[in-house]
Image (cartoon, rainbow, N blue to C red):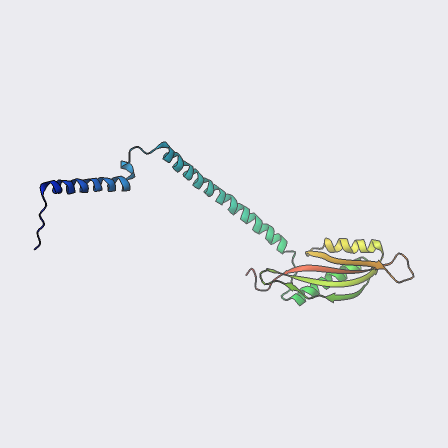
Amino acid sequence: MLRLRIDKKRKYLLIAGAVLLFIALLYRFSPGLRVGETTAEIALKERKLAKYHKTLREKKDMEARLASLNRALGRLESRLLTGDTPALAAVDIQNLLNGIAGRSAIDIKTMRVLKPEDEDEAKYIVIAVQFSITSTVRQLKEVLYRIESSPEYLTIRKIRIHAAKSREPEQIQSTLTVAGLMRKPGSFG
């Protein structure tokens, strides 16, 4: 066996170092033994605690706001076009436009379904229909009002108006592009 010989002076020095190390470890890992913690450190900890309480209160407010926004989204989505495919949604728009034109006592001359606008990251598809009518200014105003106030969410994307080539001078020819939104198949469960 290996025997180490330590003189008395070094032995006391090692014992004193071990005791100091033990006291330092106690001070570091025992917050109750700390003496002289400054008021600045206490104030800092109080501010952190107040910040955490504020974050908890804001969480409740944010959850209430999220619930409100989800209800509003549900109300707005009820105005989207129904149909499982863009073609069926376009048929819905065509039926709506035929009904609006009938109530305004005008005939739709032409109607054409445009290509659906579908972006990869978007959750909705824009379905557009272009149609032409010959009407008076008053009838056109009624058609525009009825399109904008329809129960489905429809917007007028484009409108071209020019004088009609007819015997009646008050007649105008209009070409309108009306668009509606539908939920992308497979989105939102």
